[in-house]
Image 1 (cartoon, rainbow over the protein chains, first blue to last red):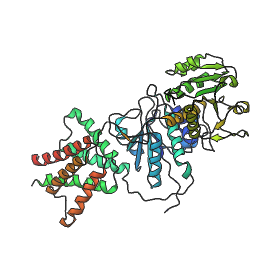
Image 2 (image 1 turned 135 degrees about the vertical axis):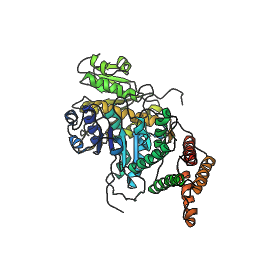
Image 3 (image 1 turned 90 degrees about the vertical axis):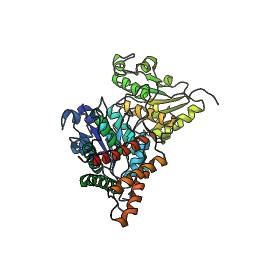
Image 4 (image 1 turned 180 degrees about the horizontal axis):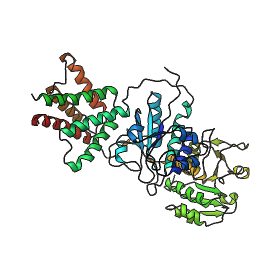
Length: 249
Length: 249
């Protein structure tokens, strides 16, 4: 039991291009009271004076924004990662509306988890490699004939839904249930362990399919709701298979 | 009871200033399938080439937009008028969230009514004279410390709520892109495969803990939302580890 207020999700802008859009995203977040921004490899470097100019009134978010070279590092320690994308991208992953996603994020935060939401670069959106690290996809139910949401609009709708889903408990004190979910970093290390050993074992064959197979495998781990204990079992299994091989009996 | 599709609300931009914002509002509407725009005395006249330039893809809304000299004329014939405003303005009027407002609008439209939503000019917002003509006020639950929604964002959130309130599909239902769930039998066979091979490899050690370890492992597989493709990958991984061991290289 704890008196900690509900932990906000981190909004992670992955490889954003225009500084203006970073500033507009900060304003969109702060309109709904969210102030935890993280940036992954912004195209024009960081800090960016054009972002500051556009963020007027929400500049504090930029000052305090985390800045990371990779998505993996930006979501290290997060236990529930959502990826916003217009397309399914052929990865098997639950697809949630913003409403459903923020309701799950709220529940996860109430249970003591750490939530991150990934937003892709303006033109291309998130790459499969980023999406594969997420637990679920957020898909805004736009007009199928016309889906032209920009970065700040996508941030705005997600922030609005967070506010809507948490309105009643906004200032309530929540219980920290000590959730034992694996962090994104722990899942990432598990994926790496399997990838390395399976590569040695010749699993990724033929070579032209290797990247695709690796992405699918990463997607499998990140989609699972893995606990720390699961991660330990899975590491242990792989270690044992290697020992068995090395014993050569 | 009728088979006519639900009549959309008209979105009425009252004395909009920048053509760009009219174009952006058209895009925001069309993102959520709304295409009935009305304009009241746009500052820079009508048509406006800067609006057209910004509306790319949603230009049809501008071509078809009604153009009126006054708000009164723009909402003539409407039976339920909503006014968006950040402030209460001292008028006694129901104040609704976007969600409540679009739910009422939907009910009104279903009953054969005609709904209009008024949006004010960029800086000043709606005047009391316009608000006084509305049946209710829509107030977006923004951060009281920072309310900086622009015209297109306000249109976007309202259009999003209309779409949400009228969506036939149940967004709470979790969809799965590109996958088909494994059956209990398939999961069971996967568990057996791993159990047999891990037993050979000496994973279940010490013997008095073996049963407990096997139960944990079965629990892990059955708790996962595994697809058929996941099951194939997991079988393939294990087979490859065994081949590697047998090759003895």
